[in-house]
Each structure stands twice: as structure tokens, then as C-alpha cells.
Length: 128
Image (cartoon, rainbow, N blue to C red; front, side, top):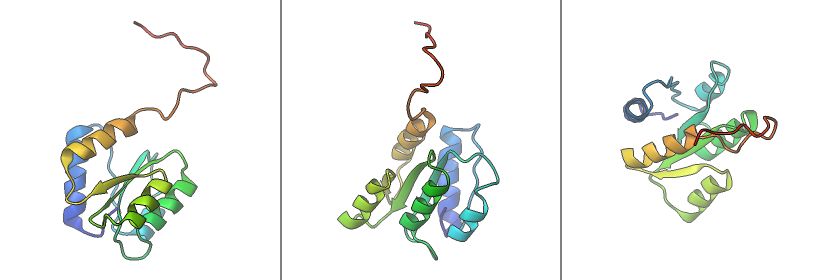
């Protein structure tokens, strides 16, 4: 989610270079984001901090309330301690602007992994 079309195109490009089989849904603001929550099975959200309407922290908090398993990264040029600590308090990743592809790739790789092993599935032995 970013109000800048150019920024959304940049993030989309990074995602699809690293995860070409993923579907990317874009939103220009928080209202658009909330309206798209039921469009598909959303696993990650990359949100700009400075947005019209709800800022990135507010949007991330509301998103996590609706979908607690989603992985969130908040992109911002504002690296003030209060902003960064607010991002981390939500359990979101902080990504400074200008956005570096390597950092985004690490987030995408981590977001692809399960949060924790499922305890409801017995001990499924692995090939070793």
C-alpha cells in the first residue's frame, strides 16, 4: 500500500523478481486496502508509513486485527525512534527508504516460511 503509483510499481517489481508466482494486490490508501482484504488470501503486506487517511502503523494494526497471521513490513524514510519502535511493537518489519531490493528479498524469504510448526499435524518425518 502506497499512495505513489511509482513506489507501488517499484515494490511490485521487486516482489515479482523474487517471487514470480505470487499475486500482488495494490492499494493506494488504507480505505482501498481495507476494501481489498476479502479479494484473496493475503499473506504479506508492505505498507508505506506516510499515507493519506490511516498512516502505515494504523493501517498495519487494523490489518493485523483482521488477519493476525499476515506478515507486515512498513516502509518509511522516517527513522525516528518512536516510529521504528511503533513498527516493531506491531511485530512488523521496518524497511527504510530508499528501499533496497536485497532487504526486501530477505523479508519476502522470511515471510514465505511458516511462522511455527503446526502442532496439530503429528511429527511428520522429513527426508534427510
